[in-house]
Amino acid sequence: MEAPRRNVELKAIDPQPARTLELALGLGASDQGLLLQRDTYFAAGRGRLKLREEEPGGAHLIAYVRPDDDPAVRVSEYRIVRVPEPVRTRDALEAVLGVRVVVQKRRRLLLWEAVRIHLDEVDGLGSYLELEAVAPPDSDLTPERARVDRLREALSIEDDRLLEGSYSDALGGRG
Image (cartoon, rainbow, N blue to C red; front, side, top):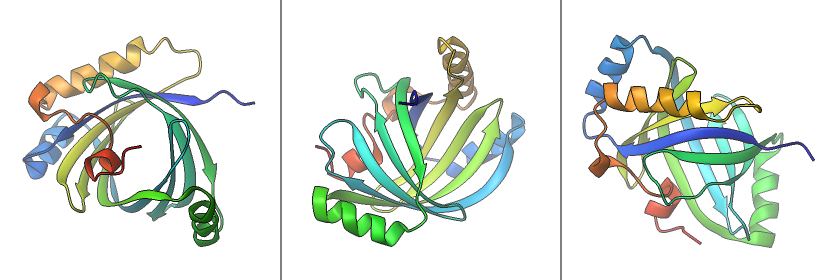
């Protein structure tokens, strides 16, 4: 079995998305454009399983495990599989596993020093930002944590803005 990918991430409420965008661009982040995403979370026995349908970008099945005990910096292990037939795949998984929750969002994607900055407008929740540093297989995660920490400081993300769990949890789909 192929080893899972890993990333270091942080998610926070974003009370001023326009200011966050301005700050990130001022730090040298490059704007990669707007993505429309629909994440269907299924009732998985371990970890989380979601089908992400994205415009542009197609669809992917994403299985991941992430402890939610430290919202400041979380490490995820994940596997991604491209899905050529998302509607049929969603129907099949829903029939067997059941749907926990559907998360719809508009995501502006920025890149800064190998960190993905997501400026998200989540239906039913509001504005959030996510910092995500993807780690190479041999990393001890120190450089990824350091980049996320530097960016967190530069964007003035305080502890009281951090989100525990995922958008699916906040929408009532935990479990």
